[in-house]
Image (cartoon, rainbow, N blue to C red; front, side):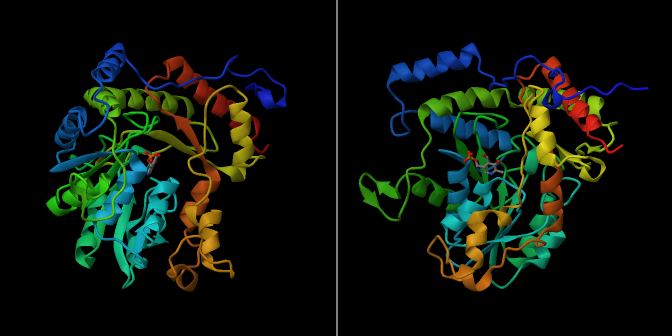
Length: 408
Ligand SMILES: Cc1ncc(COP(=O)(O)O)c(C=O)c1O
């Protein structure tokens, strides 16, 4: 009979003695380049050339007409929304199973996030659910390519074209991903990338807006830097959403390694698949046929009906094995307090848009698949710096804990 090891949380020996520290890939070349920029004194966009070089490289890589570097992925999304004309009272359809910035940037424009449901199989927004939620106020759709797997972006684009809606791709987790051989970030009207520390390439903080639309590109450039048309002259309210030259210098070198970094993520995924795909009570993620998945993270689903513990308890027990797992994401966004406050109950909206109280009811049952997935999801890391041994131990810790808590 198979022996079942006791998890560390129950007094057993943890899989690893010390916690895994998955750090970003940083080479000597990158360090030397950072030092070169620092010594040049040209740290900002107004005096340097690195940002323009990074933008040129990025637009060639994505195969898109314009790439505009910004301070992070959130500011990239905000500019994408504002430059495409989204304003107060406009409805923007998106997924509730995503990072907050996808929806909070809609709020920054005093527009209304309308949540469509996801597919359980790939965790991405479902095109039929988008169609169901279109109203005469709908102006745009934000499709997120979650975990590095493209959403059904061609179907979504068709819906947007037929209904006259703007399509924004949130590519924060999907740098290098493709649908039918076309890179994400070149399909929507305007698109946003993030180079946050955990992303497939990183500049620490950083972001990029991409578009084939000249007018949108001009607006994004203008708003990125105070709406300044010429020195101390301003035509629109803008922001300081600029990237620094130091970030761009790192970005240029990171981008050269993107395919190598994504391939390493794929190797880690193979280790996870080999170790856990036969484990009862775990559903491992799929890679759809028409896509290139870049595995930003590896999200599994725990079949909690077969377990004696909740996902949160399983998560806690796995962490005690000294491996790194997380939960992306534990709650459909509309159930978070920020959105619940908007549903009325006499409390009013924390922002300034008068439309929320009248119109919106964010309530349980709105997106059943997103609720199902949020309750069961567990995230395994795919950072390229993870060693094979660390990836094997991560998978074994998951398996060990899940097996121990199986209903018997
Ligand atoms: C799907 C998604 N959208 C937007 C963002 C925001 O990017 P940033 O953290 O660079 O602001 C992130 C990541 O952090 C993300 O995962």
